[in-house]
Length: 539
Image 1 (tube, helix red, strand yellow):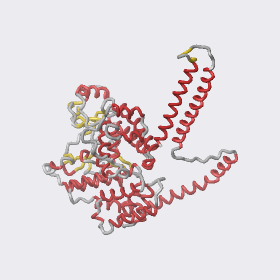
Image 2: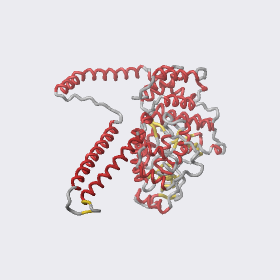
Image 3: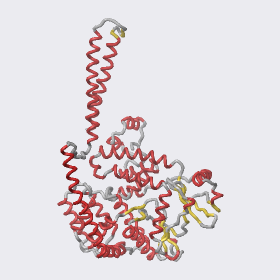
Image 4: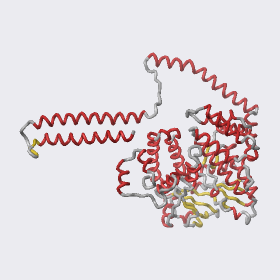
């Protein structure tokens, strides 16, 4: 942090003072030209140096368009895992450790040179004994231990952020760190990615336009994932489409329909559909790979998305406010001011036809609106909006006339019709009636329990007071100083008495124990003055 010009940040986090002093003594200056860089750039450079866990964290933070402004999102999106490939001898050893046999015994062919290398795993091309071509994803050695150590550091930093930066508390850094930890631990387990692939394969089993690699479970576990090899044109190599006789307009349409079907129909979607994870196959089929980062959308959340899109289409300000406030959770919102800004937001889109809406810009505008009011999106919604922005960007690369809203509209209409279908209404009515009757039936029992607790003095009210733990630490420090002051006073009085006794060992002509007591009292006094001075500077 200090070396990348973030020393003030480190100081506010109250990291050990010795670290900061060491940075000053070692004269760790900024790299040439970096001192003039914006803070977002320097944070990104620090993340790159901190290694794979923090690079992954930056990539996750790039999805939080509700928390960070566009310039920070742009920097986080630049984070890439630049790691050298593992040497062939180590690859052979890892195969034996993961699968219990040599690569030559398991595969008819195995290319020791990887076709892809990242911080967590690298991918090799191989051929099974039965002739099937596969991609072998191999987890790097020692990565689990390194990531776990980094996650412990990250959890501590998040706690410090929440305690020492009151202005950041509303963004829930501890919650974001916990969500990231769960996501990264799932990504470390390659068997979980394989189960995600199987889920997507079942969802699109009847769709001939979407291809999901199949898993070879006999070769797959937490450390290795063997899946069918996808041989097609990467979405990052659009110049090759013409050579393969592929129509980019049709590909954009089918790709958008596939991702929207994941989100709005299945509620389980690929959260990172960037060009490197999308391939185009003959007959205009779309293949998705790398299912380490996925998102889940509940039925309730899908209804909220439909309500938001319908409200935007109908220019319904109250509908937009209702959905956004629902996402605020416990965050207090200045409703009159918020309503005014939603009205201004809708005024910008008042005369824009539905087919002319730019979903990416619409999402960015909504995120700016809620960020200005301290509203933090639920994690699943942050992933969803990021996936939609990425999808529209890819669609525009394929077809400059691409309009994502044109593909969303049929899904929204279908979901609205399904929501108000008599069968759906009857099902929701039965569920609400059942819940209401259950609540009424349990009310007497709850009242009796409350009365009994009050009668026996066991009635409790739980209060969540912010920074109460910080207050406890301050109280502990104050009591320590008070104790040290009392001890120092006792040393001075006791040493003064000892000085009057002309007996025992001498030092500089003075009674040794009296002199030693005064020196100890002097040391304690200096420490007390320094501690009080430091605490005054930290306020």
